[in-house]
Image 1 (cartoon, rainbow, N blue to C red):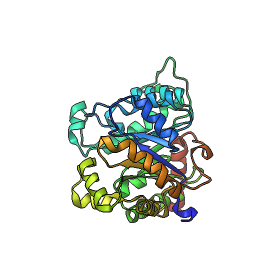
Image 2 (image 1 turned 90 degrees about the vertical axis):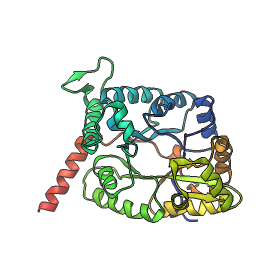
Image 3 (image 1 turned 60 degrees about the vertical axis):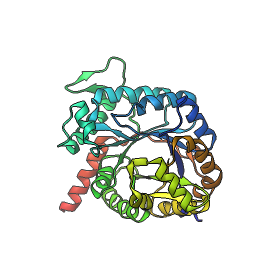
Image 4 (image 1 turned 90 degrees about the horizontal axis):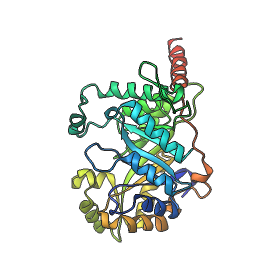
Length: 327
């Protein structure tokens, strides 16, 4: 393998781990040598992703803490800003805020009284408003927070698996985080995002990540059976064969390297196994796969997290792009 087929960082999705101390899981992930730990966000599950990250923040010292992804339209902006500010207080410079729209499960929107129709526009408004909170410590019609001074917003990564998601991520955020994609799909999405970003002046390069389902076992048949038992995303046999990297460690390392070749620099591994297998799979991944897919001279300690690009910077860059296209 060459530098082009290795990742700069590799993290683990904290999902479905055995019941116990959340902080203990984070310490294990950090001690195994991973660069980041990520939580999901669904209204109709009992785990709150940001609360879980706060527990992890208090127990760890180096690992990056991220959401993959937080369903931004379903929460009041003021509440989200307070939670993020609190998390960054405990873990300064270690937070990445991955956001998405959701909608695959309409009941989540119904449960909180938010219309499913128009969620794309609502997502954009909430993203603008969140940036305004961190820039001015005000929300809504200028209502000021009493103890939340203006400060840097954590980097925003937009999740999704469509061309529109890639365009939105490039134009309005700091990173793109696709999931349930094959390497060849990722390559096309990266190209779309890079084309949009290339037309913008004065903004940092877009972080390109990917979340991949992985199952390890001695044979591909055994791994596929284990993935089916895990039941992630409710995938049927056909979709599991497309989107789950399942097999022996060397096979998985080769398959994962294809995502790096396609343009991903940051990898999030979502272990597609039953809860009882999560910890051992994570340890095996660290021992047998991680050394072969991460760049040996890079990792969390070699890449500091920069504050989010402000909406003003992005809108100014987009204006320059429009002017050049007009001319």
